[in-house]
Length: 423
Image 1 (cartoon, one colour):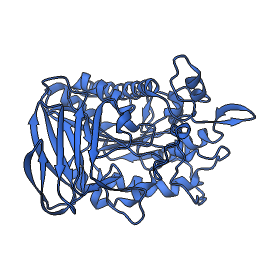
Image 2 (cartoon, rainbow, N blue to C red):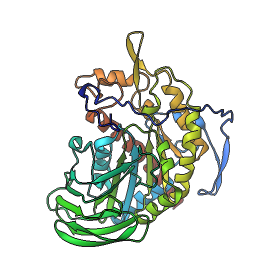
Image 3 (spheres, one colour):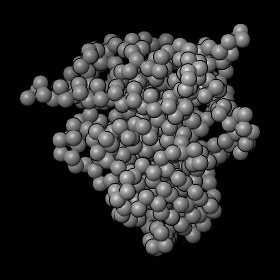
């Protein structure tokens, strides 16, 4: 529906597109290691793969309830809370489960209330789901667009989109309280010097690098217009953010599984990190792998996705990476909606990828209630999920955001406790 611009309303809440077309089966008979050398901690750490089953819990599979999974991120939170200065940036990647700023809008609100910060963060120049986004408005015209789904296209922005042409976009950040001062930045690619206007104020852009970030203004405006007459320099989007605090960027793309990042090379990702530094990368994928009701083997996904995880680890070497598992998804079996037969297998597969690549993991499936939870959520009054039995609604994603936030805060408290014990 998204790719071919089909607007048949009964299907609008159902995700029909999956990037995984010709799955290739691979064998992975290796058992999880029991120990590994944690370079950051400087000691050998006992690992427990079974920790992935625990709901409401972020783990790097280190044994012990006091283990800190997000070491870099929690340390940055500690410094921010202590000094009230500095900026922490989170990139939250996902599919239609988070599009329209679902889940991340609540997560952003929680973090900014506790640690400071203001602004919705990254916004693309154009978005088909903008009419459904409650945290901002994006009204655009005139842009030429390329994205993940286009053939032979590489190094679009990490949002999965790139824009060019004589475009104009009106932005409104609805998260800002009146009178709040924020910085407005434009993010663009490499090309000859060109111009851009911010509320009719002309700015010259010099795109000397593959990723460039340039200030447009520092003001209290919640609404503004950005225009360009450029036809060649790729434009990626804008960012609205405070000087200090937590900034959460939503990078949603409908219908993907994460393997699409094969179209963005490591050097480009390094350029993103150099210009727009992230402290935490979150990847939430999975429901688009559950597109066939009887599939139970997702070993092919390991072969397709692992190179991207390796690439992200190298490019964002000073950031934590958190894999969030698939949520529940249901199909009709024998006349009754039940969890997909393969959902538990997929969660285990995703956990194994996190384990093997020494990444952190959060079990979203178990955290929302486990088996048949999506059916229960859709049946509640008021409902927490749509009747497609795939997508939690706004209320439901707010609950998921709170669960992820509480898990992060538990990890943070473990860090603070460890810090105090060392003194």
